[in-house]
Length: 86
Image (tube, rainbow, N blue to C red; front, top):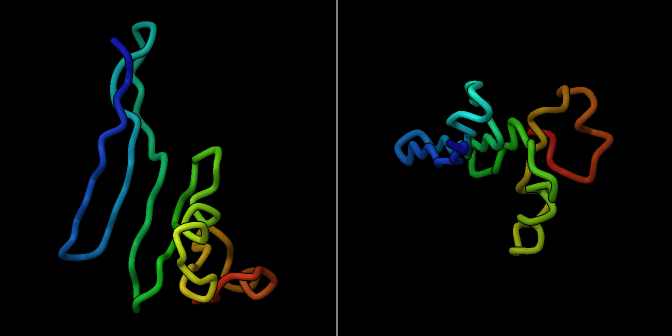
């Protein structure tokens, strides 16, 4: 059996995740692939385990950089990115 990547959406609290779930070679597979939250009208990227980079994809869809927060960076280091600090 192979793993699946089901979405977990909590639209009430604006919390969104994709996780790997399943089995691979008799081993359990589980892990977060992508975790986004919407906080104060900004998209917070809490975890990005994608190859493409979700921030880049959001930009391609027209989301301005000032509306994207790289939450996986420390608050101090966010100021050195082109994205919002929080």
